[in-house]
Length: 224
Image 1 (tube, helix red, strand yellow):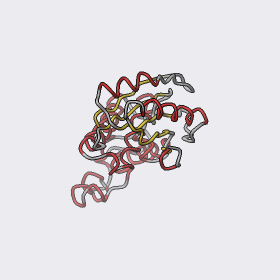
Image 2 (cartoon, rainbow, N blue to C red):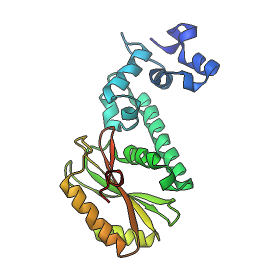
Image 3 (cartoon, rainbow, N blue to C red):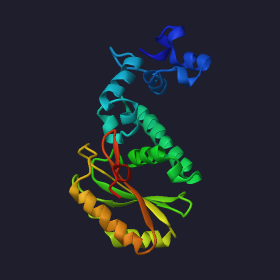
Image 4 (cartoon, helix red, strand yellow):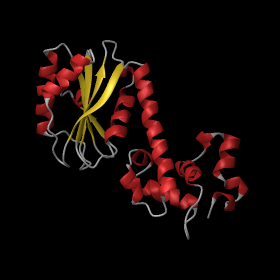
């Protein structure tokens, strides 16, 4: 079933134009991107199947290209459109963080970290370098490892902080297993980086551990 086969008063496009995008359910918005379903599955049903598979809209926004390939009925064109929307979300958050102090938007910082790292099937470590006004200078994924281990080199982070003239930093890494709970190794690494960056007058504001659909903040846990 395609969108044109849905009764006019139930079509997402017409509903959006009449009532605004906020009036649409998540599945209806996704259906607008998909436009068509597949044999035996309407476009709205396919959209809802995607949401169920990824655990809701947040999980879908963190899906990678390989994750989307696992959804029956998503061809290359549909996967490309969804990937484009996800990338636009990342860029919009990046622009917002560049224009306002990070400390004024802690939830945006978490969302950004999850969009960057949440869909990866390998462990990665990134740093948000901030100026003295806590505005974003640059986000960089600095280290990439296997599914359960990343070699993080404090010297490289210190060097990059000096190159960017950063005054503050937010650390972030992911747990591909999906559990965001910090490990003893995460806590040891955090303290090592805090000490190393302190030597060059760079303050670590937080360390975010990204899981599937969850981000744990060291600062909120009182671990910094």
